[in-house]
Structure formats: C-alpha cells, structure tokens
Amino acid sequence: MGEPGADNKTRGGVLLVTGGSRGIGAATARLAAQRSWQVAVNYTANSLAADEVVRAIRAEGGTAMAVQADVADEAQVMTMFARIDARLGPLTGLVNNAGVVDVTARLDEMDVARWRRMFDINVIGSMLCAREAVRRMSTRHGGSGGAIVNVSSAASRLGSPGQYVDYAASKGAIDALTLGLAKEVAAEGIRVNAVRPGLIDTDIHASGGLPDRVKSLQHQVPMQRGGSADEVAQAIVWLLSDAASYTTMSLIDVSGAR
Image (cartoon, rainbow, N blue to C red; front, side, top):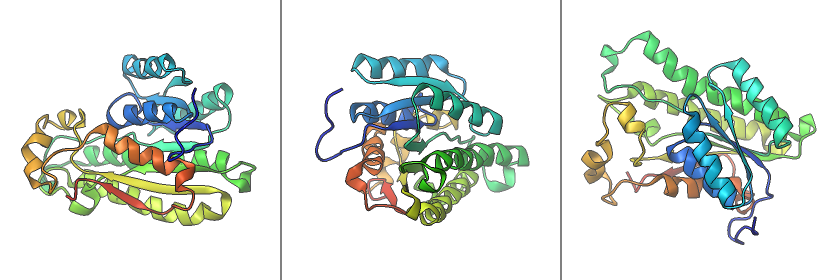
C-alpha cells in the first residue's frame, strides 16, 4: 500500500473493527485500510457483507480478514481475538462499533429482554473487546501501545425520548467507559476516545423500524442534513492515527451541531 497522508499518519498496525460489515463500521474499515492498517472486519451473521468489505480492501492493495463473533458472547470474543493474533499479529487498534437499536417505543412499553439484548451487545460487548485489546496493547502486559475508539451516539446526551431511551442509556455507558478507561491506561501507551454520531444515513434506522428517520428529522440539524458513514469514519480514523497522539479521553460529536 502507499504511504498514508502526512495529515493522518498511522503505524500501519493491526485494527479490529467490530460490526465492520456495514454502515459506519464498513466505512471505517475501508478508510483505515487506505491508511495502511491491516483490518479485521468483525460481523455477527452477514458473512457476505463482511466478505464484500474485505474484497474491496484487498482490491485496493490492502490487507483484511473477516472474522465472525457475537460480541456479547465472551467465548466468541476470545476466539475472535485469537484468530486475529494468529493471522495478523498483535492488535494495535480497536473500533468498538458493533451495536443495535430496537423498534421505537416508550420506556413503559419495553421489556427486560429488550434491555438485556441492548446492553449485552452495546455495552458488555464493547467492554469485552476493550478488555482483550488492553491485554494485548498495554505496556503493562508487554504490548507496544495502541488506540481504542468507541462509537457512542449523540443520543447519549439527547436521550432519544419516545424512541430509544434504552439505546441512549447504553451509549451513555459507552461515554463513561471511554472516560474511565482512558485514564486507566493513559500511562500504558493506550489512547481511548469516542465519536458520537448524530443522524447518519445507515441501515441501522431500518432495523429499528424507521428507515426514513434521517430524512424526517434532518430539519432539526443546524446543518440541515444528515451525515454519512464516511464522514464519521474520517473522525474515527483520525483518532486512531498518530496525528491524534495527544488526544485521549475525548468525546467527539459528528452531528452537524445537533
């Protein structure tokens, strides 16, 4: 691959992008590969979509592999990391992007099964992957350092009333994880940051029963439009890069001022 741009340097390390088969994850995987990262594209069930991302990366001369795991399942996460270790080498970057929403509802219409699924995937899944990443990156464990970027949401500060307060709560937990973990490992060569996307045009809205959510709400955005997955990926890959070498414990909104 060619040398990365001077404004977005990386060390060409090994990166895991969870939920990397679609939307923000896929855009991040492709852009990171263009910046000389070797990328592991995680997926839960859609192997065809993950394979397509890998093919696109390889077609541009990059290195990538697809790796299946439900991030809410500890055994599957452990197996995923072992496969990446064996195939690509020591991990130096993690993007905790895997996440779910559910159908629009008020809190008093939700059940515990929905909440457990939401928090198992969005929160515990991110913590499991962060734990395994720290065990590989931290100088305390013999690693050479690295960067973790958590994908939160503007919902963590807006609350998503009448739609997804449980999703918003799970992303509030991601913000807290980012702040605490950043301090915990700052002296061990690891930077931890988060991006908080706003209204972004991806298929996650369709999975929540609102395929036209961006169009219907974009009038609330001061920039008067929704964002793209590629725009969020630019922020994520910058946070992974050496250009952000003194940036940690940051929550970066990519939300058009919403």
